[in-house]
Every structure is written in structure tokens, then in C-alpha cells.
Image 1: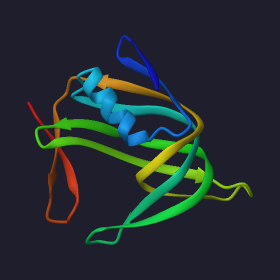
Image 2: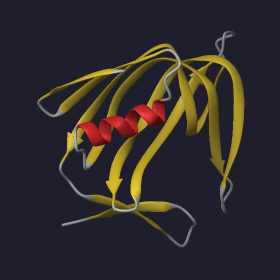
Image 3: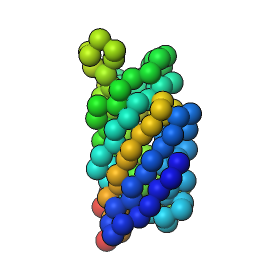
Length: 139
């Protein structure tokens, strides 16, 4: 992985075999991020695990093969109890059909080009009565 900061943006290039979550945790540490919003991410993924919230918990499903990354949205938050990387992905198959969900894990296949927007706003994710961790905007 290679990365470079320019103003409020971090440009990231990930390579084949790298894990997207491991790399984003390294980015949080290297740039001492508090909060970042994923602006853009294109490339291919493999060893993908997507989740679906069934109203009580996330159910994960693994997908073999490689998939075109059509859309990746989310945010990165540094908290006292650990980083929270919340991502949703839409992936494309060879037959051009699509599928998506909460990205739980994935490795890069060939390449990934990503841009993050940095914010100094402190946000915490706290468990809510619906079973999800929602944003709490700090002062």
C-alpha cells in the first residue's frame, strides 16, 4: 500500500493480496485520523465477506472469486475502544449482475484506488436499543 496526504484528502493505492481493513487501520494510525469519510474507491476485491443486519445481528456470507468494486461508501472512526471501519459495498460479477451489503472483510485483487476526506470532528459509535452502533456527535 502507498498513500499520500494532500490538504484534507488522503490518496491510497492498495495492491493485490492486501486486506482492505488491515490497510485502513494502518492509515488511521499513520495519519492519526479521528474521523474520515470514504469519498471514492475503485478496483477489484476477492475473499469477500458481506453482512446483512437481520434486526438482531449481522449475518455474514463469504464469496469466493473476484469482483469488480462498483461502489464503496462509509467512514472510519478512531475510538478509545478501537477503530470502527463502517463500509458498504456494491460488487459486480462477470455476468454484470450486482450484489452488495455491509463489508465485513475483503482482500484486494490487482488494485484499489481510494480517496478519504479527513475531518477533525469527533464521532463515537455507541450501541443503541435497535442493536446497531449509531453516531454520537461529540462537541
